[in-house]
Amino acid sequence: MKKLILGLALIGGLFTTNFASASAYKADDASIDVLFDNSIDITTTVNEMALGSMMAPQSVTGDQSVGGYLVRSFFCGFIGLHRSYMGTGGKSVWWWYFCVPVLGGVTNCFDFWWVVFKGGEAMEKYRDNGKLMVWTGN
Image: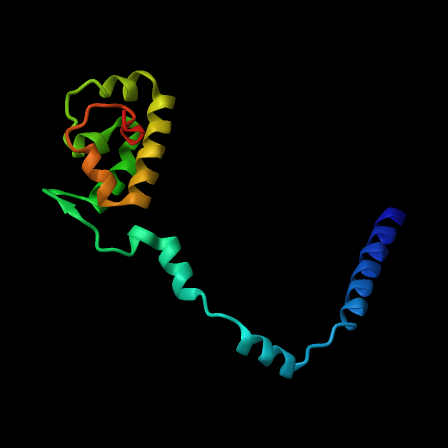
């Protein structure tokens, strides 16, 4: 019981000390307004940089769309369904996904994020491509 009371007193003392020291800071509305007036608006630049190709219209290549690819890659990529969607079909990449599941999952992670950031440009490299690591360019 003594430890509980001592612990509560210690926590109470810490809170009281923090609140007391917070009163030393003063906010002057005029100086804050001056800071806002002198600042540079970077919201447009940040949004363009961060969203990149996701803000651009999603390209459609034949019957395949970027959204369709990403949905298949996110939910069923560990078994290679996104590769089938792009026309890889019965080529040699399938045994990587079924026989080496960890490698298939890691490869799917790279596939998914590469298309998220590059969009239709990356999807063109997946069309009828039987290579396991399409993003390497080999």
